[in-house]
Structures are given as C-alpha cells and as structure tokens.
Image 1 (tube, rainbow, N blue to C red):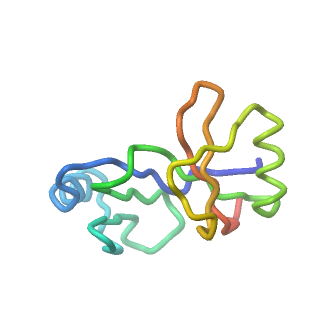
Image 2 (image 1 turned 180 degrees about the vertical axis):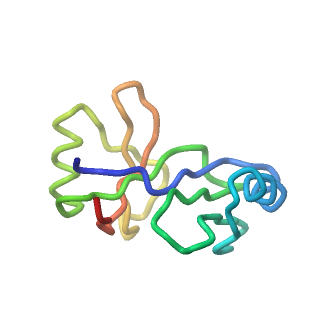
Amino acid sequence: MASRITELIVGSREPERLAAFWCEVLGYVVVGRADGDTVIGPPDGSQGLRLIFSRTDPTHPDLSPVDRDQDAELERLLALGAAPADVGQTGEEPWRVLTDPDGNLFCLLRNRVAD
C-alpha cells in the first residue's frame, strides 16, 4: 500500500448544516473550522477518515502517502497515469493537485500516515 484516502473534501453551500448531518450519521464530531470550512472526524481523535465541508472546493479525495514520502509517491502516481492539475495554487501549498486518468481531481498530501 502506498497511499490512503485520509480526507474527503465535500463541496457544500452550507458547510455547518451538512457537517451536523454527517456527524449524526457517522457518530463523528466537529474537529475544526477554518476559512468557512467545517472538519469532522472520529470522536476519539484517531486517524479515521475526516470529512471537510467546503464552500469553495469541489468534492474530491485527499491522499496521504503510507510507505514513502510525498515526492516518491507523486512519481508513482504520475507513472500510473495521474497528471498535474492547476486549480490556482501558488506552489507553496503542502499538497499536490492531480487528476486521475478520467480527469477527476484529487490531492496528494505531504504528511505520511501509518498503514
């Protein structure tokens, strides 16, 4: 295993309302708020999947490398058919924006996670 989906960004007109709904559905709690986004996750603080409800970002998964650093995982993903995508990032972000072979956006985060 080389990556794991650690976050799912969900585009939303009303992030707080949608976060409250999914907290009830999943037994999650709000773990953060920033720039109009609401982040929910497991109540025990574990590394379970976090959902980020955003007014500005489209729905897409965020991947974290498991057994290699971000640069090595980026090389692997590009070799598999991913392509770099420009969505207006500055280049200073700690993530890389990519598309899968069908053109769907996803991000590769810098932080490694345990398998």
